Length: 157
Image (cartoon, rainbow, N blue to C red):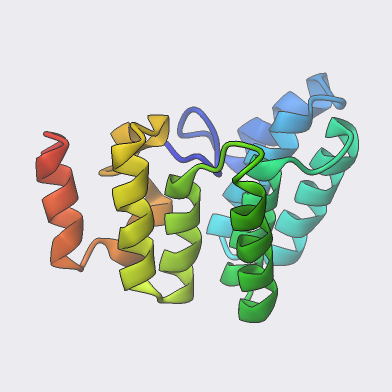
């Protein structure tokens, strides 16, 4: 489970099947972009992301976090950080899920900031925290002892 790749452990093929049946379902493209990104197919991930944004009528905060995550995975650090900064500025007006920011900072290798974001997500009772232990987008943080502390604190072990 991942905030980026969807509500279940779906595959690219399964999500493409959903898109074939419901080509205007914008969230399917969001999930597809995460699944492709996990597989390192970053150009395809960005294309799926853009199609999803187009169908959704614009990029809201969750969509922007997906874009920043893909940019981070693709090594476009400055672009990813600019998007994160914009998201944080808009957080005064709209909800910002710090769990998603933790995923981005984890990919960028900024573990301290990733764990600060996880702490904020924990304090805000962010929905996605229940998937922390299984979320593949948190793999970059698993070797850090603070990750196990979070898992224990949440009684997910």
